[in-house]
Image (cartoon, rainbow, N blue to C red; front, side, top):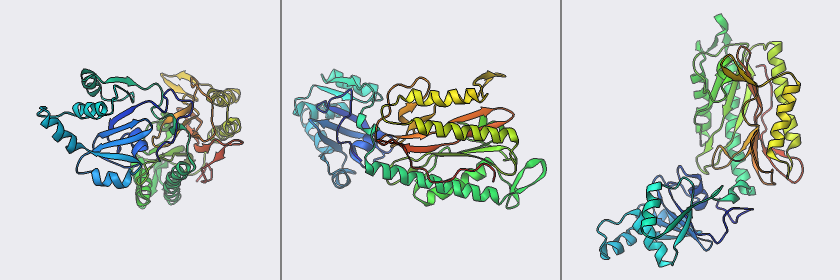
Length: 387
């Protein structure tokens, strides 16, 4: 899991790095240490070697699970500082003592490093410099092991989707196009629970799964609420995190229970073709903004305009893709204002969408591994519109 070296990065391998965070919630800390810890702790990389300062509660586990780092005792530092006259040693005192032992006066920290802690270190004559760009730029290029972990999380999403389709197929269409499942209305909340439960049983956690039908689907991040209805598009966007590894998968499909209108079918077909265009454009060295523009131009040529109408956005108004790894959204980005070029080893979503109130929304999302030739689609689940 941990990085092995920078790739075209703003930091040098020789930079002295410092993190204070809980690896349960901080991707950089998890990447550096390969272990989940619920409370904030100290990580340093000095001259290419990792150091952890751990509480008595975590020190033995850290020695097992983060064996690539030298693990030091937090309580040991606290005793020495008290002996030196500091009655209540703070985290900044411990960091400063550790760094001074190694004659370090300057550290690079993540951009979200606690401001108060940075100020406290400055007062102790430790210069704190925020990183520019990614703290671990090597995170952007996935190792074969990381690709396997991402793919495993993606398979969880595919299982959740399969359970959702199974439930939709088992529904009966009632009055006012309402979908009835096992004698009760099928709501976004109920279908989301079916998806999330299937993923939990596989060892994943699905948060904020999107099950949005009708006009709700025209807001790409609307999770969906209330009864689902037949004959209109329903967007299912599933992005679980594997509990064992911390890596994410990401998958979106648009489906209709019943019969889609001709306009909805054309919308779906256009998005499907737009996704194929994006896959065709994705090669090492291609600018991510060019991939997005190719899809955007195609949609415009097909008559699907993007802009504000009736007080809300419609058309294609989000990016074509984003990187996935220890975070659900990470570099690279493929959008209108994106910078940078695709590189071999990146894992990026391919998820164009079109949204028109009154018609509904369609978004299709697969995950691509950028290779030396054509990108490899990591997603296996088939695409179909009507259920």
